[in-house]
Length: 116
Figure 1 (cartoon, one colour):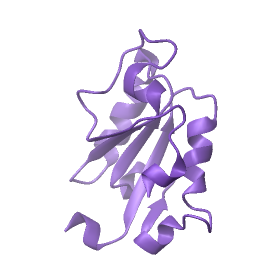
Figure 2 (spheres, helix red, strand yellow):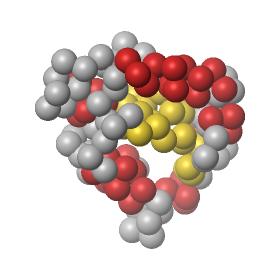
Figure 3 (tube, helix red, strand yellow):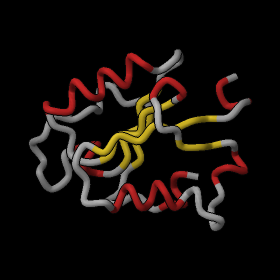
């Protein structure tokens, strides 16, 4: 089972204000301690179980996200984190990944407690 082992997240910043990045990193802090749930960040998509897309997704990021996604082992998950990644946020007209996302975590920024 996917969740019976360590779960690695590969964050992709597609142009954030930094708030979602801060919230994602906070789940690794002692307050939330995602490591107790065997959740970790990785710096390569080759070791990732899920891509975490943050920020307003633009067409310029298609190549970056596609390459990262292809480098991931199966099964592949995409998590969109925050209103900007889900709907374009205040921009509103940006291309979105809703049709490709496995999990959407809403908020601007989402609160850390919602991730854990």
